[in-house]
Length: 218
Image 1 (cartoon, rainbow, N blue to C red):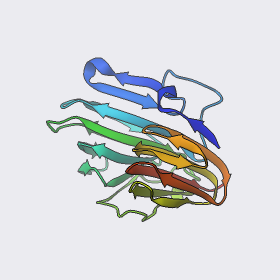
Image 2: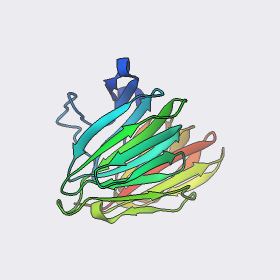
Image 3: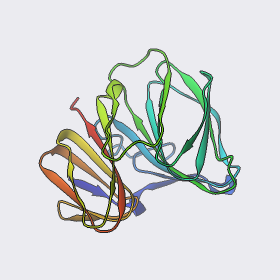
């Protein structure tokens, strides 16, 4: 198990434009050849957008993009004709496939915080696709078969224990609160990368929200 703390993330974004980003993996100008990916996961970005701020239209390809809103509302528009407001508790996925363009903005009057995760598809190419699951229930897994991955969302009360899925690659990201994972205390923005995970539990120290990626070997 390899633990990465919130303050070790690479800074990014454009603070003058109301965009603050923190990257868990090499991203943009921040290149680390030893931190390019983990399993299928290519990026885990914490994004904060001030009211009115956002990312203008830009392209993606050969990437599965999964977005989790922490607070506020994210307005999404893409070149396949989808326009959606994503709120806390929703899971949004954009399959960039052979190529797609999209816009991400905070059109609300309050700050927006979201976590965006990029995964590498098993087979590149194809047609872009879009999906949103409103208010996903606790412990309901969300499958991304194109990347051989499964997202587990856990909202825990203090003292509650949850099993971490076994898997070739498991990535645990703490959205809020504190949890103990195999003797390691993890707080907001901390993440653990576990290889060949087996029989692990996470215990909430406080009320907590955790995103867990279960990924197949490659």
